[in-house]
Amino acid sequence: MTHYAVLFEVDVWHDYGLNRGGILHEALSLEQQAQVMAQYASDRFLKITPTATTARTLAGQQLLFRPTPKGFLVGVKLAPTASESRPLVPLAADFQLTFALQVIDPYFFNYTALHSEVPPFHWLSNESGNAIAGQRFLSAPVSPFDPERAYQADELYSEPAGETVNLFRSRRDMGPTAPDPNPISDDWEPIPTDTFDPTLAYPEAAIVLVANQVYRARQAVAAGSDVTDATQWERGTTIANQYVTSADRLAVRAPLFNLDLSSAALTQATVRILRGATTAIAWEQSFESGDGPLATAQVTLSSLPPGRYRLEVLDAARVPLPALGFDFYLDATARRDRWLGVIHIGLGNGDFALLDGAGSVRSPRYRLRFLNRASRWRYRFPADQAIGTGADVVPETPDNQQVLVTAQPLPLTRFGTGIRLQAEDAATPSVSEEVLLPQPDIRRIQRQNAQWYSDIYLSNLSVESA
Image 1 (cartoon, rainbow, N blue to C red):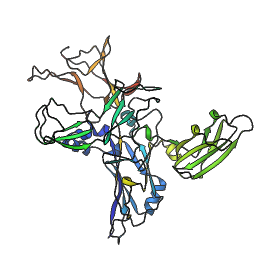
Image 2: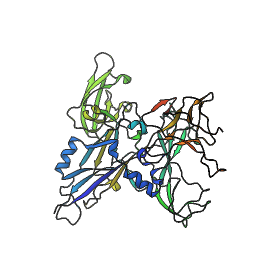
Image 3: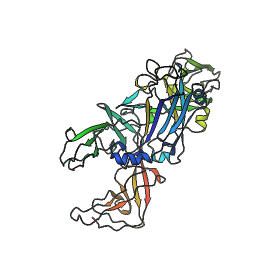
């Protein structure tokens, strides 16, 4: 009898489809989590396919590629006589699989917190070593704050927080050097948002989020409770706070390209290509100018297979010039078809390893997570619009109440709620005064004044003026 096992599985999460408004997926009730996940499918926005080389490897190694609602898995045919779950065809030391990521939703960058001006390419790998809170991420760790770089709206930085990290989102473009984030100002927003309110009572099984930690009420809890009281609250999931970010970006090159050397003022240079993260030379060529400094060098890499490489430039004394070197992914198809990136899976090490010390299948589960974009929600009315008590919007300019906008960016989610033009009046509980404004359409978003804005066009609404 033929037996297969899961060699590894990749879950692709996107907070746009899994969160509800400002509430993280893990902080939803269990019923809401199930409802949202039942309607979630990563293939709505992302196509994941084995590269041509990987398709041949899958066939030769008796491996199966299978899409799942949340990503994909690779199954492995097992040896029939081994007592352990060992692959029928042993995995070599240089075993590797590569999967292309292609965006199929034309509005993906409207609701995804990634650079969108030039479609970026990302290297995502089980060599990341990014294991946190019991999860294995293929993305690199979110970078700490760097005061010498510019940040775009929605970019993140991290700081250590026990077994996880705290994350902070940029509310606007900042640069060329970003302001000090301590203390947190209007420039930065801590995420995810805590959902616990100590002034409220909670029913049994209620789920709350506090400081990256999920808690579940063991029983009905009165107002004034403390989530660290284990008799009332059960500690649950720790939020890992890891996303695909600019730390995963990698240059992508076709086999033939021109390398700009004009800044180095070299009359002689050697261009060297190293394979992956090794020191193995895959290609090398020297260039010399008979008339002044070299302006460019034509790099021809048609003899090399697709993959990750490092380029180095050496001067006449064969000393590398670090300022001119860079890592890149070589693949004409990836560049032509504007891939979002690749998932690279090797044998892995430690908790990321595909096999244990005896060669048996470990079936690790890896994760990618995309952050949803945040924008200021801007409502446009045909005439001046009255604003009620407790509203979540303000006039965009003091002299124009035809355009109302949120004071800060709000997260965009597929499932969420609108915001208030007028709040309920606690003095009249039998009457509903609340007036809600709808959440934005992801198709209507633009950059303006270093921020993202979502425009919503409405007819005027009746409220009690504040």
